[in-house]
Image 1 (tube, rainbow, N blue to C red):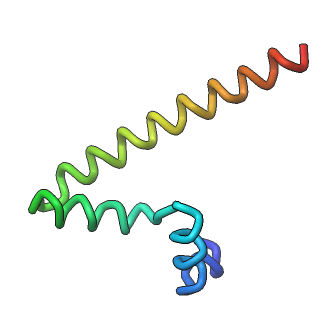
Image 2 (image 1 turned 90 degrees about the vertical axis):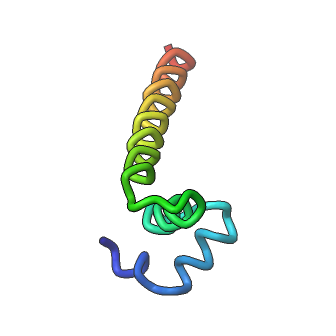
Length: 67
């Protein structure tokens, strides 16, 4: 992991821009539903798939615009 990501200032930067660390998301899910981590892992996998699909769609749109 990049050193700057570990610093507390980076967490403040992420939060100020509506971004969150995966660890923070996992903790929030586990606290909210009182889970042992199973559901939070499931949510993270869903986010990974959604982000991947969005990225592929975005790249496809960019290629079509430049054609």
